[in-house]
Length: 336
Image (tube, rainbow, N blue to C red; front, side, top):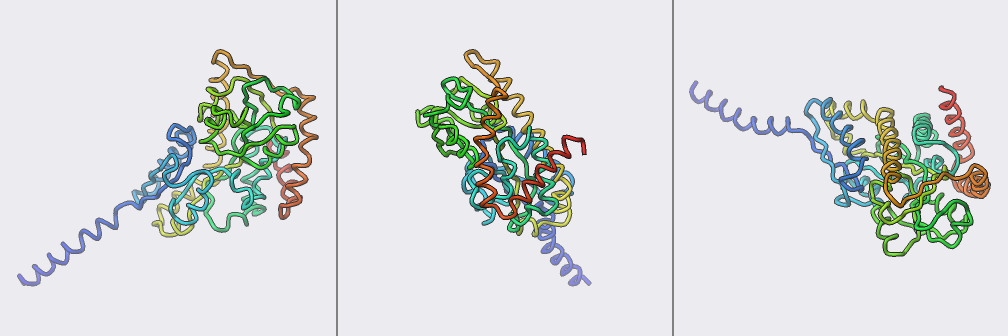
């Protein structure tokens, strides 16, 4: 009996560490190429992470890596596919050749704000109209950043003011618009906006107010023009294998807090970023903020039609997707 008891004790001792290890939460690496001060982290990723961890019954821990530790805005999608990051935030601008359908929301003058564009974009995904572009990943959220305004070191109020200027852009549609307006687009990613202008490589930046605050662009520009000339499409994606290997409670928690809840959180966050970024800049001495005159806006819309035509020509089911996007925008405005 004593030998049996001793044997049982040894077995229990051997199994106990394994059981303890099994109970440890799985750590997920969430890559956020934006700086640690970004509202995307504070108002979007951190609340989502806490909600998931709370509902996952201790089975998952989400560790966020801000900055370029796990990837930058150019390569973060590939890093997520490779499993360097289990999940990530990014923008579709640097991925224009891989993702065309989702950039229907980036076409100029198609929507008024981030809330309606984010809802419409998610509905297209939910209805499988653009889902084929995401076969390799698990989609956590699709959403948009605010319309690009023009921020420069000289007044910009009409197309003639942009002629000859070098303007930083970070998506295809905005680069095309700058060219049609007579400027020269300078391709860049958000972390490089500041130095690109401060070093004189560019004269201004075409970007939303959310980026102005996050990347301190009001330190290198003083004249600001509000427009509806194009939104920035963005994502929260997850590696499929990383998701599949999670314990069931963790997968259920991710599913519960992703999709519509997550994109609504991000839509509200980016809308808040726009309001607060604009207000902070307006409060600073020496800055001027003007809205694009309605007549000039119509002129810009006509000038931008080739952007829409070009997108239609290179996008599979482009006409159907654009029509569906416009239909969803109409429903949202009608309260449907």
